[in-house]
Length: 140
Image 1 (cartoon, rainbow, N blue to C red):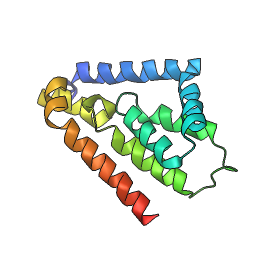
Image 2 (cartoon, rainbow, N blue to C red):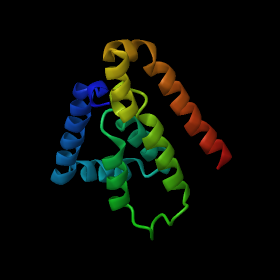
Image 3 (tube, one colour):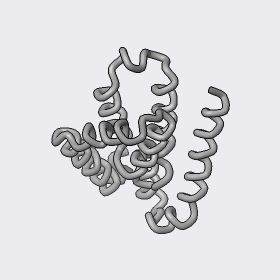
């Protein structure tokens, strides 16, 4: 089983996680969340931008920084903000192949090139992502 592990993909994903942890430790992700909240002050816009950012930066630290920025007093458990954040951060990572662990694994296992994904899939993923946000807005 160990012979079938795609080590370069695992190391690539580990490198992304380490870089993101560095950004979080330096406070840059929290600063970004505060910038979004200050300038947009709209949960749909803020969460949509967080989702798009999650296609570049891993969604776990983005969600963690959002959780650190907004207390449960501002947005209680089950609030629309958290539901939309879960959708945006989880789905936005698919816009670029490097935005999700599954995408990185797929790059290694199926030998999919980043540029190929960008040309052939990213636009469709973005349309699906924005359509989901629009449906969420219509339902809420």
